[in-house]
Length: 104
Image 1 (cartoon, helix red, strand yellow):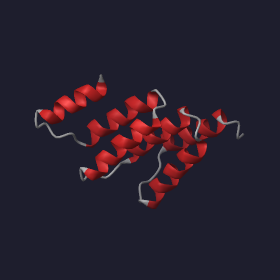
Image 2 (cartoon, one colour):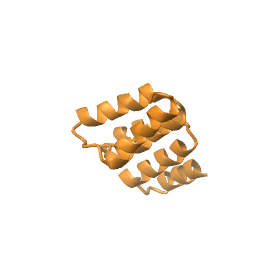
Image 3 (cartoon, helix red, strand yellow):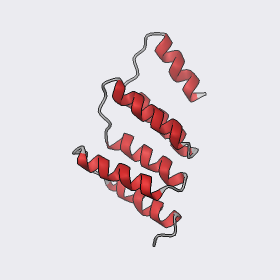
Image 4 (tube, helix red, strand yellow):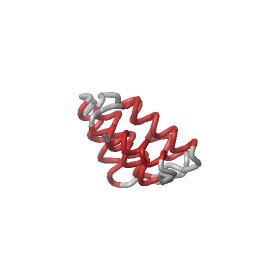
């Protein structure tokens, strides 16, 4: 439903902004749908938007829920490389990710 609404929004010439893309990444993250979250993340960049801490956190959450701690760690590193400062939620997501994977 979220993706359908996103496409409808674009078909009506209503340009998505960073919040729109991040909300959609979050929607897929909640279900652990990494590939869909990645697609939206890539669309966000192709549309000329820079991911912010909330977008990176949403993508890390998708990997966490899918049981992919290495992929979440890659996003965490990418975030820092792109000079996007991790916040408390970023660290919490990574702690949770490692905990879910049994990496105590």
